[in-house]
Structure formats: structure tokens, C-alpha cells
Amino acid sequence: MLDRYPFTRALSAEESARLRERVVLFLHEKSIVGAGGLTVRDEMRVCIAAQACMLIINLDLDYYRGWVEVIVYPDEFVAEYDYVDEDGVAHHVAAPMTGESWLEGPVILSWADAQLRGGDSGYNVVIHEFAHKIDMLNGDANGFPPLHPGMDRGAWSRAFGTAYEDFRGRVERREPTTIDPYAAEHPAEFFAVLSEAFIETPAAVFSEYGDVYRQLAAFYRQDPAARLVRQPLAAGGVR
Ligand SMILES: [Zn+2]
Image 1 (cartoon, rainbow, N blue to C red):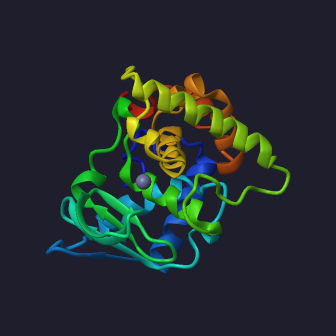
Image 2 (cartoon, protein in one colour; image 1 turned 30 degrees about the vertical axis):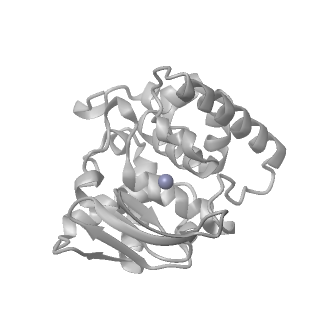
Image 3 (cartoon, rainbow, N blue to C red; image 1 turned 60 degrees about the vertical axis):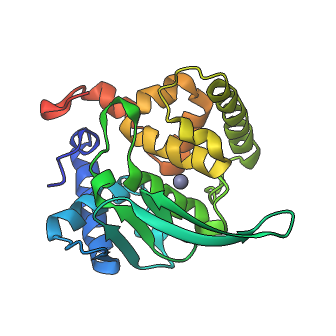
């Protein structure tokens, strides 16, 4: 079950064992429940946990502290929220969503979209939402998670700030990018999308935004691009 993804097949034996350990703890601590008529089977729980735990194979489960619930809908779900605009007018919005993360609250996922991951797009809604969770360890999602001692906050800001501005420009000019254009929406989305791509298509992140890749490698304490070079197309993998 844990070797169904190209990124898990590329893991060393030691990393694989750690992933397995994290998944067991994750399933013990978190409650993964169905909504909208979905019955969540055990193998679905393992799929979600395995992807979520890829971000923390060399960190620990404490990075997912402060909340317990993962809610899974069969397909896109409608998120409703209210806000007041700058003219003081109240709005009610209902938007279809593939995933959502609440500060100190649940992660919500569309099961249909959770299975669309992979390929060259770097798309992975599960990793995306759990990256938001890590970002929210120090408050609202802003693309600045709590860095490890010894990591340079200035270097992080410069790498992400420069890459984000460059990426926004490319998206505005409608240039084709290997990274999901949704990353241009907000610095928090840039961090979450680049975290997805860091696991799914690390070579693309490395070649397009090397400084961001190095910051992510230091933060997640793993080097997925090197892993794929060591073990290209591991065990029947496809690109
Ligand atoms: Zn997001």
C-alpha cells in the first residue's frame, strides 16, 4: 500500500521504515471521517496518511499537532463563508473546493481530487493541504512556517519573495510553467504548491527555483530530487 506512489517507491529502506512509522502514528492520532455520503475505507485512510506523512518523514508527527480531524467528501465540496468588503458590504460566498485547511481545525479533502495526483503537473491536493497545516503552526497561513534553529529567516524570505514575484509575472504574462499557476494567488499558496511539487516533481522545482528548493530541502530535511537521481523510475515507476 505504501509503495503505490512514485515518490514513496524512491525512498531508501530507512526512509520507508520511517514513513511506515509515521503513518501508523498518524492513523492512531487522527480521525479520518467521511462526509457527503462517503464511506472511508481503511485503504483510503492509508493513502491519505502516506501522502500527508511524506512531508514529515524526517520531521515528526508533532508538526501535525493541535487538531485531529480529516474530513473526506466524495468529490468537490462547497465551502461557504461570509466576509465584509472594504466598503462595509457583507458578502456570502459559496465556492466549490477540492481541499481546505482550517487553523487549529480540520483538513477537508475531496476524495476524487485526492486521487488525481501525480504526473508532470506536480498536483497533489493532500500534500497541498498538509503543507498549509505546517505553515499554520505559527498562525495564519502566510508561506512562513516555523523554521528550524540554524535556518536563516532572511534567506527564506529572499528565496521565496524573489521566486513568488517572478512566478506572478510569468503567470500574468501567461507563460507556460511546470508549476501550477495557482501558486501565484498568495504567498501561502506559493508555499503549499511548491511543497506539492517538491515531493511530486522535485526536479522541476530544483531547476526553476533552486533557492526555494534548497530552503524546502532544509525545512523538510529531505532531498527528493537526489532520491530520484539515485533511483530513476524505481520499481516500475512512471513519469
Ligand atoms: Zn491552498
